[in-house]
Length: 111
Length: 113
Image 1 (spheres, rainbow over the protein chains, first blue to last red):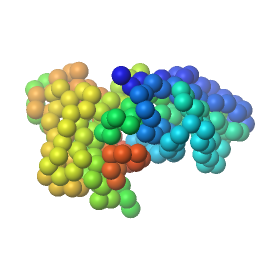
Image 2: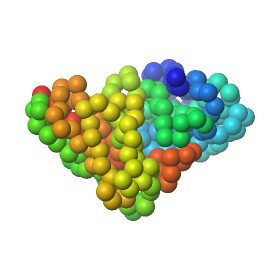
Image 3: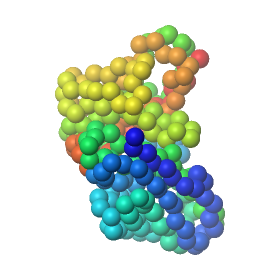
Image 4: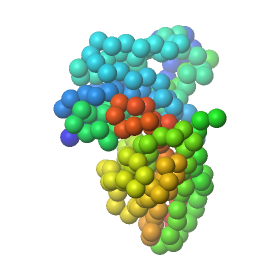
């Protein structure tokens, strides 16, 4: 069965303190790995899609990378407005209708 | 503005009283889906729809029904709600099911007493 595990569950950073969030996955064949941001009381908001190992994508202070076993979301010099829960999801090649989500990493950035 | 809307946003009800949560999207998306989100469990798919009149079960379909009579609407029906269906529910849509990012609604917080 496809599995997605995110770590850590929660992360507290000082403003400007760079770090990384991890998303480990087990899937028979990866169609795509997705990163979403979720603010309290809101629905998830799409950030990135990665399709193959070695691929990287960037958006402002965020950079997502992908290997055959895991993905990292690197946050460079975070600001308090980056505080949110970050969700990772995978879609398998043999299951076009299933988006399997991890439980998320709750990020808090202190000023 | 492209969006997914859900109603109601908050609902408190009692065991056994049928309820419907509406979902509508204005992006002409073919694929729509319902999720529930519980602490520590992440988002779990309840039902999905590939297109009008085409629906199928996700990971946790027990106790729920859906319908897709129009492309834009995908209501979630709880015929006889129970306390274990207390959760945060999200509707989502995408162009298609394959490799496309999903657009999520704002969520419906349901409490079943």
